Length: 342
Image (cartoon, rainbow, N blue to C red):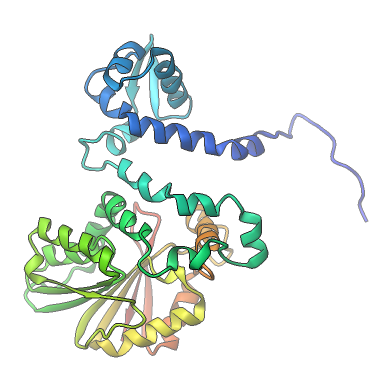
């Protein structure tokens, strides 16, 4: 038994520990910068602490410290007292940019999720969320309306990439079932690419209101129908050519996923496909880092959810009667696509 204690050396550093413990500070700062609209102000030409303070209605001292902090952490650059946007900040944090992501904070920093991470040890002891009523899986949870409204800008590009990857024959009718549709962008994007596509969206009634709004804005509302209720309880109907399962399986344990897929299988026409978008870790469960780390979010926010490897996903679909499943990357996103054939 080795009872020797580690000794300090130049190779050891507590930096990772301190950065992790203090990570909430960076969260608070970026939230404040988005709230004050600092990045948009810089894009408009206000590039000093003085001009930014006037534009954003803050103290000059507070703005200087904020922008210096943002510079230290890579959101801005600074030269001779003037601040500039990085390419990433210009794309994702300026309100007029098509890639603006500031709205996702209302979901990613929602009180329910933040509360869950205040007692991670209890979730680890229990093996699932300690948030009351099943956390994010509570029926008609208002958090999912925030998700639908806030996350849509972030999901626009993946929805476009997925529709392009599927390369569907626009000359033939297409019946699509979008399960847990949320903002509805994935089904809507297919409808925009495919003039004969009919979309049926399943989700809670309060969430489907957002999807319907987005379908109307996209000009496809006449081909966009809703099916309110639980994905485990509503009658899907039959004859679907395509079923979309976007970021839903990770909320449940293996047996519940099996049950959902077995319910989906008979709703498909012969030769129909299920298209699943998920965070898919490698079998070591520590790589790639972001998809693998997503398991912790599921531990904190759901009773039994997880990030599933491709062999696990493939087995789920096989258990439900699907003949084959293929894994496809969807760069530059962190997620991958599983296409399963009936």
